[in-house]
Length: 455
Length: 85
Image 1 (cartoon, rainbow over the protein chains, first blue to last red):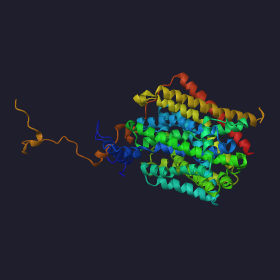
Image 2 (cartoon, each protein chain N blue to C red):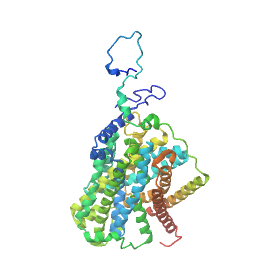
Image 3 (cartoon, rainbow over the protein chains, first blue to last red):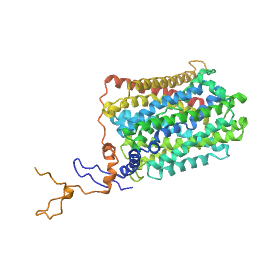
């Protein structure tokens, strides 16, 4: 990689200053341009996929898969099977906006909010992100710990594995290298589909459940918790920060928007399939012994699956939880680091060397360190942390989404790539739905806790 | 009128007065520069975008949403802590 400021502008109208970050990004772009020039469609697609799949499969993280499995264990097949693809369709609308704004403006979400709407909104967004990311990261380490516990490995191994992955993926000093390593790992999210196959579900029953029936019964508050945590399992603030910043860091341009849409749609489809896999695997626990999620102390889904569907199903689910936690740690740490660099106004790219982007690399590692420290506390309520991480993300999401829609409608920034009317209608509907579900759970739970309404 | 001969076919000849070469010298990084759009360079993205002019109604709506979200978040956190006990 070239040293920073390798060349200096030759004056007014001369070539721009070329930094090491520019040089690295330029090499990636040269391959994209070669593929486009030579009409190599599949190679072009291969070069341009990444941020969308990573955002979607990164969100199929430990807490999300536990939330889906909890839905299955509590309510069986039915409402939640078609609800998951519906949520990922909603996620696609939000994430496509992020990709488009990143490709057109070449700037991250935090940076644009801060500069366009003012420091207060920028820092509010970064604050929300840091809070939800820290809680979610704790849940990701919990997920790895739960998966490793199936193989009789302890919390210390989970901490070392998570931190080693963060350091290893950061070591290359290139966005491309980071993205490809994490993409390779993310494909193992398919282990949840394998777990679903191994529990030998009634395929006809799975197909029948796509008519949204039966609607889940039981406690209203538990249903609200599962609804809010399931929504939080598909769309979260970190995804918005991550995909826009990663699209800009990858060097995407308006010419790449079509491929960015393929990338995001592929991620949404894969995530929905694997999410349904986790739910179907969880549903095996309902059909075999009728246990509810409260019965699985310590979020021990893999162990419970072993009892009802055999060791292979338990092992697949446990390995899936390790993968889901590991990929999410990498993407969530990246989103935190992007936001920190963007809001403080310093270098924030995987294409920068650690020496030139100290804060970016430090934020990446330190946020993982803090979360890892928390899971070493004995007696932590694992399932409660995992579910509440998603609920908190759902509650805080509407502000991030509103600002995202405002950016995507900003003609001064987006020019001809502003949102279409239909995108705005869907986007506002998503914000309203997410806001209502999050608020309904928050208010209902609070009123029950302070005994204003009966529990 | 006599057409101009292509420059490439001009025979080399010694100039009576040496002319300065107005072409920019080629640099190895020029090729890299061509792969990026001008507004993709770090030197360009480091410049802040101008502040948007938000109407007072938009600002009021954003603050209302922000306060609502903070209140509901506090309720969720309170409930979570209460459940731990």
